[in-house]
Image: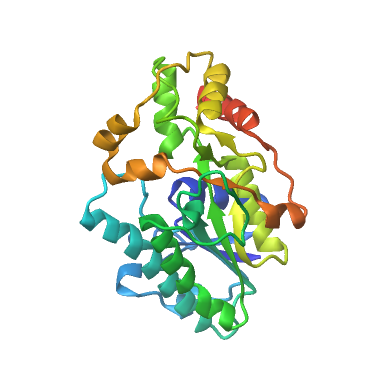
Amino acid sequence: MRVVVSGASGLIGGHLVRHLRQQGHEVVTLVRRPVRGPGEVRWDPAAGELDPAALGAVDAAVNLSGAGVGDHRWDEQYKQLVLSSRVDSTRTLVRALLALDTAPRVLVNASAIGAYGDAGEAVLTEDAPRGDGFLADVVARWEAAAEPAAVAGVRVALARTGLLADPGGGAFGRLLTLFRLGAGGPLGSGRQWWSLISTPDEVAALTFLLEQPVSGPVNLACPQPARNAAVARALGRALHRPALLPAPAPALRVALGEFAGEVLASQRVVPRVLLQAGFRFQHPDAHAVAGWLAGAHRRS
């Protein structure tokens, strides 16, 4: 396939682009800087600018654009950036794709399990109700921005990604540093459910969604969610470090501000759609994810 990818310079995007090219697909990446090669197309999602003629024929698209939710302390300005970077990029890409002579067969649009909010002990499949909170509101508007493509007949898969376990960045990049120093442990009470996914499973799932007839919301999280304390123990064992020092909820709120509410939220997510479609996880539980993460960390 000829696949257009936005957010290709991000943590997930870089891995996905390499994987797709290794699989023999032609990948065109959308960039905000000046174009440096034939596999790039310049765009400005904040201004709504993407020339359909520059895209050429497109079989599929993957939209991974968006400012990192944990990269900056949340103030009103950064919260607006988190929202606008997702909605603007989705609207701009969808508008350009629908202006092509032939629309692509599929759009895989990034989303997040933040859609469910803090759900306590509830098991969350794709038909679970939306939750409350800032990220739940962001996801609602993010996914709505992709709706015109579905109305036009494009198969749209909304990839609601869980907590990405990758040593190169995100929440787990910082957690690994703490554990390596012997300062790791549960966050808050440690009883909140965490729904993880390893980078290899994330990339494989996104590729699966490009190729298989799956549409609508799709949870990208390992089949067996675990409580935060169990994740901490699994990481400690995998890294051969203690996992005994808890981070009290008040301290997290001082350090992280409003984002601490997302860290302490409980989301017991199950990837029912992926499993029913036949997807197989390499790392189906916290122990397997932690083992992969520790090995990838040592190799990096």
